[in-house]
Image (tube, rainbow, N blue to C red; front, side, top):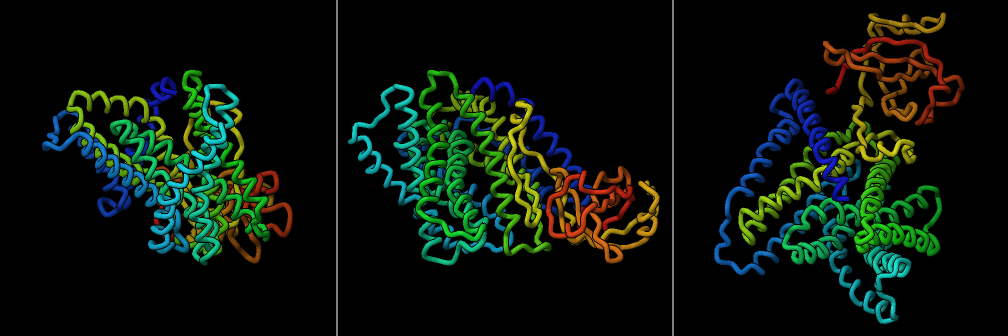
Length: 493
């Protein structure tokens, strides 16, 4: 895994650099210094310079004992990791936002129930079931002795809130609260690991372990809400099935780390990357089926990239300061290079993937394994603006008509509203609009290279009646009518 991460860290940083330059130029052109993205991108070189400065200077320990420095910074860094990931989750909760006191309650319960792990593990060990170096035994222990124990204690806090309150009343709430419970668990666990590793596990805990804990907890939450969404009530059989699935994933993830002598940690990396794609899909699906959907509320998730990068850099800087106080400038410089070399790829993969959301009301996406294994190494990159509710002026220029009936010519000069966002052949860049008592589909092809707000659209019509409630279309179901230029009449690009 270290070899793969080292080989990909330069391309990953180049991708992040490309996004930053491109988005900074666009933001400067559209909003100037008034937009949040302008300042987020501008702060990146400042934070990077600060991180480098920490590796170049000795920071005094102020006479504090090393153990005190270690535990204080372990607590602070662990708190920042959990807090920043909770912030990220709340950015996705755009329609019916949760009260902070309930988020805090589940987090505290997640911390408290973590301590159930110790008596449960002792009970399992008392049965003679332990890690003993044998492959199948250790895999079973990772699933049962680690996975099932930890997934159970992470399940209880959000289940209690769902069972005894009405706060979890939106599909995304299930993943939100399950992940926050997992972050409460991870907070306690991260303190222990950061302290034991002299803070060197900072990104292993922030990027791998904390995210993995959220994903495995989300497996149970996603299955739970899916049962409810289908009009059925969750039961004990469903709990057992979801508990087993989450525990199998958790156990598989841990097994290759524990048996690192097999030199197959790359399997954990590949499995982790798959988990990231699936988790993004799970969150996106639950946002899509929200009963509180409001087209006026836009999920501008591309800005999450720069928020996450800033927050994760802050976590690193705090850890570097503590490490410098413990071991001095020379060791800190080596540690900083190790972080850059080993974690840049996953850092970019997570921040880019976690900023790629597209809200299409009612659309349920499915995950397909890439036919090309190389594609798995690429983060999820989907960045189409949401024009739902925008008006478009159908320009008479550059019409290209297919067939004999010139519908586009009749449309020219009309001002129409993009009423519903759709997915066409897997791309969320299509919309439904009505004109003269007929519903048409339009797909955004490309933006005009010189005129702001001007796009080329493909206009299509369904071959079959009664398609108005669909959210997904294949091109074979549609008849292309032609291409036309349009000008957006409201909102930002």
